[in-house]
Length: 230
Image (cartoon, rainbow, N blue to C red; front, side, top):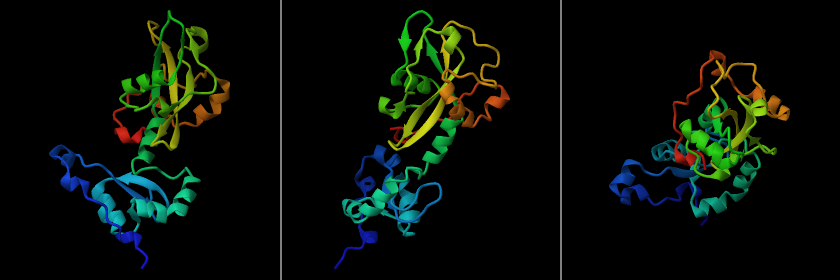
């Protein structure tokens, strides 16, 4: 008799966990077997809130537990989904992606000491804006090195780098160079923008910029959960 993947039960770790873990139970990993708006399509392996995963997705036969049996059973579907990376990696990733794309991050650099930007520099800038990135591997720099000090060529100018969500979705983010000790120009985030690399103009111009049109410094008001940026 062939096993039914819809009846492969998971061990309820939350029921045997500590009090702290019960207050903040781990998310539930499932394999979607049909399209779920805002979360993913068939074959997507995603992490969702436990109650939603069980009551809405599992009971609604929209997903199955990501058990070893099911991962093998749905292997072909999963591999096909991985070919189409535009599907969301989690229920929060579409929101995370939009917020990142609409945010401008100021990168503080030295006016006196030579520097070349590395992923940890951008992680620091993101953390100052309230965005905690767990690993340097989640930050992808442009192909061209960014070095200084260089007031004329880089001060208050933009470049694009990428943040990887859940090791899958690559999101472009706008960064702006600011040398420490140099007063910001009035309305530093106004349009039109200036770019460090002309090759990135089309990409940067394509990013949402509603915040900039208000001539206000963008201060993100959210903190992403750790599992979103890994």
